[in-house]
Length: 131
Image (cartoon, rainbow, N blue to C red; front, side, top):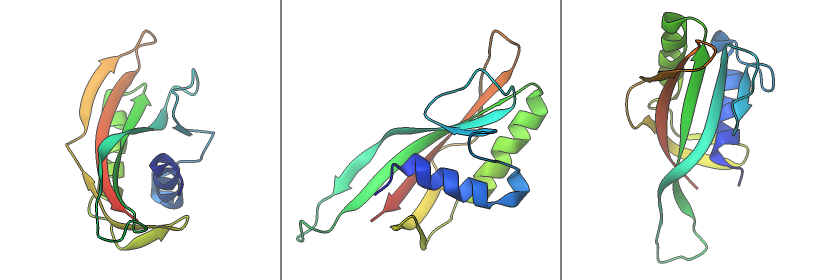
């Protein structure tokens, strides 16, 4: 299975209303120096894999953190809120061979900080269940 960040990246890129393109304004794992306005997805610890009677059955509960950086505070907040609306409650979907029974927000979009270039950073944590 892919890293969850790859699957979430594909889901966000498929949602054309967000205007996100991988390696242009959508990235995985690392915040680039440019562009100023971008989205970054990072894999986080999530929860322990479920144990079942069938050891071959893998039911994971990973999580990712989505960060939006934007020159404009309100534009950045609105984009992260739109991302939340796309992902929260999504389920019964297969992406890159992984079946996602549910994707849900662990919290609300939150302001994190202003960076040294006066860009606003916002974060959102996403939990999921997949096999």
